[in-house]
Image 1 (cartoon, each protein chain N blue to C red):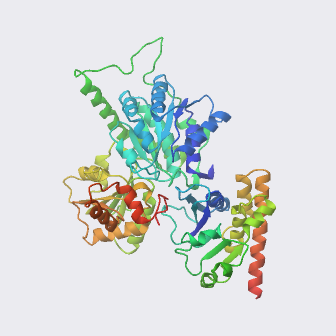
Image 2 (cartoon, rainbow over the protein chains, first blue to last red):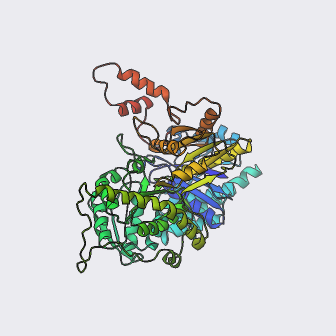
Image 3 (spheres, each protein chain N blue to C red):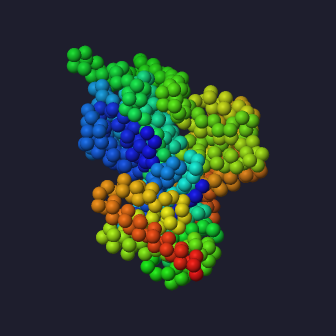
Length: 193
Length: 420
């Protein structure tokens, strides 16, 4: 079982990201269960979405309190929500920011997780460039594929295109590819360092 | 075909495959995605020969279904929570008139306090309305139960409510095997009403009945419901043969062989409970679980048989009778009357509070340790300190004010659904 928790704000596509991730995993022949917490679905309010991934059918229905990976779509949530609850050493952290994790005060956490497991990716900027809108979720899924290798970039892009046919899907898939490449080269740099 | 799909979309597709002639519905969370999707499918023609009525209320929805069903159309609606309450009067008419309407109930708490999240208070409030009530454990089962529900309803001429946990199932993306139109057509023949309004052969559906025959008509209602206890398992077998998977039936026994302690529950929480059962079995503890798929009619004899070897039965239910106790618990105690078994009533998952493996495990440890009083009603994960603070506070002053607001103020939160 691999458990993913996505933190975002209403309108950033946290729920859609979890759903697309589950579709990508399903397309690769595995089992996935995506579900949101609902209630604060106002634009800008903190939102949490979950995705469980397994080789077996998933019957557990509780929220994810011990994630293997946390995706943070909006770094301003750092001061508002306990984003890293249950994230243990060896877990993965992906933060949407154009700054470094250290600038956000996350160096200690990054070290605890392992240097190749915690990464910053400027998903909003990537989305703005390739989609024309500051919606980071698809880019973050591409980055997630690179960081965790739990799912392939190809499956992620297919899931994005099937959810958003046409130009919107293409732009989002392109953003996912660019973010994927960003993470691959960041990891290469940190391996060389 | 297997798809990774939202529960609501899967159910909308299943209902489409059942070819209803009339859908009358009013949107309410968390049912909304189902009826939105169905109205879309009628608009695009995927669901042909179907009249979709966007009515003014849930009372209107059920009333329209009664009229449509009385006129011989396969009729469907869906609702949740307060919407079901708004239908209440019409629900009793649908069952009393013997109209085979099928409804999806996306289970949600009943206010006040207003709460949009999942529990079973809506279904339980209408448990005596004369509708058959089936509870889905997963989205696959929700799909399969709808296909079985139309057969069941139309064979007996009794309305059927398919209950699925709001948000937990309706908004979850998971793998669902959606049947083909040919498969469903082979399982579910066209609707031949047992009674219908026809100007060339006039009948009265809904005659006034006085004391001379009211009891007998009601007896027939009861007899028909009891017939469902034979038909539900039969349909599950037939469904298995036709579709190649087990879905439905009266009960879902899980590792009951030699189980000394059995957890009884309804709906999507069963998966979490099964995880705990497996973990405790690994430790050599004789645990089992019993899912109630068919809650109405109540399969008393089957429940008794399934629990006959148990010493302790822990009923975990997402609703309760205020001022009385457990509802499923009471039925279970009735079914096990005279057996050497202790039945514990535990209320959990109210208003969307998650039932976690940890809470179920802690509960079972208490039961096994003899720390839980079987004569009292228990509330899973109850914050007793908070309750006591509020009770203490409300003892002072002439106008203590509303509990709900004080609780939130004490928590320093607004209703957010996160329960953190």
